[in-house]
Length: 557
Picture 1 (cartoon, one colour):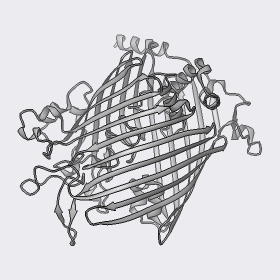
Picture 2 (cartoon, one colour; picture 1 turned 45 degrees about the vertical axis):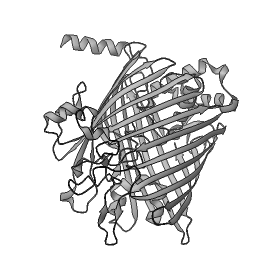
Picture 3 (cartoon, helix red, strand yellow; picture 1 turned 30 degrees about the vertical axis):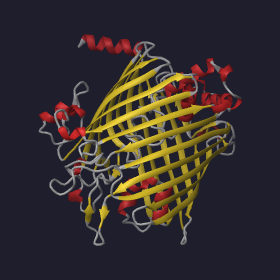
Picture 4 (cartoon, helix red, strand yellow; picture 1 turned 180 degrees about the horizontal axis):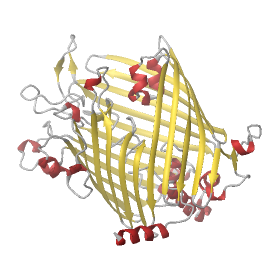
């Protein structure tokens, strides 16, 4: 016990002062900036496979960028100063920061970082922010549909004794207009209980997040953190969507452990979520997701990772999957082979300046369980539940500053993400936890990002998605199962054992989107978005076009 107390005191004593250890929201624009600086070679290892950064980490990256300021463009220099004003909170002063309860509403500055209230001393700090979002959108079809959404909320965050971070937020919103149009504009509504239940006179939704996080840096190259609570979680590489955890699902409750030291890093997470929605409360259930990943990296060359995940349901917490140093595959066997085990390998390389390559190979069911199975040698076997993703990120192409080009290809075999036991599908609240295109499909994604200046950013994206869907007859019954629906498992002695990729009802989607993000006043952000999705049913020779646009105004202080 004495040794443990001494270790804790040692860790705390060597932790940096003014370390804000709470996480930065994944929707924050600073992630785009540090990613571009990483590809440019200014900073190293932003662990974007495990993308949530603490404010302390962001501050450390900004320090490194400042040291290489001579290599920045004019826009990058202004963005650096913008984020320094926000993240160097120990330098809080009236020239850079404004708070409602101190300065009053009638002195509303354009260029200062805004808060509702702040409290700071040597042991504790607290930052209180209000947020509000207004979204007006329209679906452009023969019968156009409109939707208007407005929500407001509060965020409270801070750090105690430089090591214990805390975060709390809630958001409540209302909807006027067409629900289908609303879900196109704000896809996260599809997994929101109040929106899906739709039992009140006015369409509405709510979101809440909160956690405690302990982080310490005992030495310069070591960072350790433990986090308990709820927030948005993404995991794995992927410039568009991710094969492991895309984040296109309800935020999960979890405990997560992160460790990094020198060339090694490790993540272990255990989370809970829910199954598909049902009005019959007795049919609702809790499911669990566990993940371990070990990563090895060589500076300026590459990162290589090995990871496992497992999904289980219909029982309480299983401590077999809490163990961070064990093969889930063999744990699953010891627990009578009831659960959905996956294995993945990923790679990222930055050995060429301004050019980043990454790849992920995903095995639904561990490859260790396939030894000796002759059908695995036939790639069309339904047991070959594999997926892979290849991508490249090119920053400042052709010496054009502030521009980035991204290309990515994703291919997902039939039956990936499904499971013989329906409660163990790779999903939460009926939404795929993994890549957005689902099984028996592939996607080519091309993307262009350009910072016109420090307050205007534009993004253009084109996606070509091919999918082979299960065939449904005129009575709504399953006529042919080709593994195109993660909620439909392989039926023994009914469905074919060998399936060609993209078999079934063939549908091709060409999706074009454009985003213009404008921040004319600090913390007042406008998103102007247009999306066009042309779906061609190759099997039946018909096509359908869906297009919509919206404008979103975000106010935060």
